[in-house]
Amino acid sequence: MAHKLLRHSLIYTGGNIAARGLNFLIQITVWSNIFTPADYGQIAYCYVFISFMAVILPFGLDAAFMNFYLRRKEKNAYLSNVYLLVFALAAFFVLSFFIFRRTLAPLAIRSDMPQLLTLSLTILFFDIINNLGILYLRAEERAVLSVLLQNAEILIRLILLILLVTSFSAKIVHILWANLISSFLLFAVLNILMLPKLRVSLLSRPRMRELLLFGLPFMLSGIFDRSIELADRRLLGYFLDDAAVGMYVASYTVAVLIRLLVYSFNAGWQPYFLQEIDKPKGLERMEKIYMRTAGLLLLAWVLASLWMPELVRIPLGAGRHILNAAYWPAIPVIPVIMGAYVMMGLYFLELPGIYYRNKTYLNALFMGAAAFLNIGLNLLMIPRYGMMGAALATAAAYALMAVLIRLWNIRHTPLKRGNLKLLIMIGLSAGTYLLLQAEFVNTGTRIAGSLIYVALMYLMQPLKFADQNS
Image 1 (cartoon, rainbow, N blue to C red):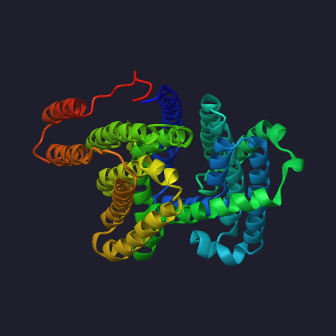
Image 2 (cartoon, rainbow, N blue to C red):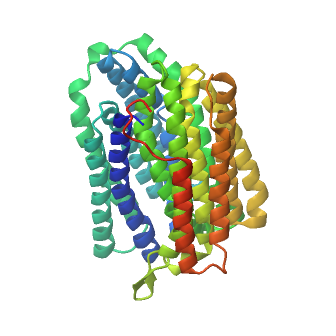
Image 3 (tube, rainbow, N blue to C red):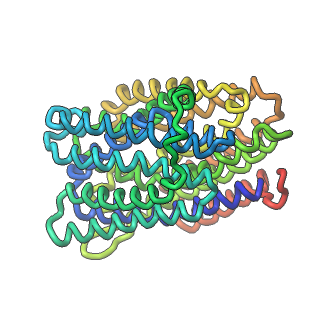
């Protein structure tokens, strides 16, 4: 594995572990011990809205920025054009939603409280610009600064939330106020970093058109991805209630450990493969990285799935736990959601093939198929299986994406692929988890089984980081 990819991925992983650790503290330990599952469900609707619209409003220009900034010479020109377009589009749509906030609030956040929608809209605007700023730092290979700023923002949010709740009252509106202030501070810092690079003279209608044409398919992909990630929460609220949504989202947040690994790796992976795929034997290196990273993700899934459900039940005293006992009915979904994120990681690892063939529109097709499967399965399975039905629908959708892109790459890229080894690793991981999580297995046996599994996975896919071209 190339040293640059490894170094950047480790920086992003370390930074994201700290950030997600703080987020975990906020959303699991703090929220679940202060707010009821029903209140948790209501704030979850606000963040579903923010997350979904944050994908739509950039119109795929964030993906276009990374592609052209890294693969073209006119870096400041692309940054200037993307920044102006994103800022203008986000401001226009956020202001439009604000004008009609009383009408749109029940539809957008399942609440007739316009104040919650107003706060959500303001956070949304800052987050869209902040995402572009973080991508700029990633493209400039300023990984340390990127993770420091993101961790500082989350730490400030945690401090503000505790101050607001202890100084006033435990109301969900304080969650949004803390987020708004911390997002604004990050917005200010990132703009200070980007503004010296921005030039009005570099704005160009042809370049804007080029960016939009490249980015729009990615917007569609993003909508499909957010649908897979978020549709279950709205449908759970429709078929069950807000309390079920609150319990489900809390356990979903625990499962974010694997998503953390996936997105941390992808933060270094995307810039790396965009620079490497056109080089001799570039795709061959991508396949080697695929197999090694797949092994690590499967290893992380098994170990986390076995032990995280136990860890969140640890008592903190005074009747409190890391995850409040009122949320425990949703704990069984944690391993399923973690498995879904492993499938997402396998999908990300296959992206170099479609970039190499300039078939990036396939990203939207694969995600679209998965999104339709996800919504269909949610409609069928939530009424029958509740929260577990929603989790299984998510896992099935991401698995479909991983299989579709793998099959396409096998057919259209001339590489020898380790499909048999991959299937054996998946089978070994699934079998180990099913065996060791059984009720008759005691803690000592589970620890021994975990160590044997780690040894077998290492023997199948030993890690080698010394070879620059491996």
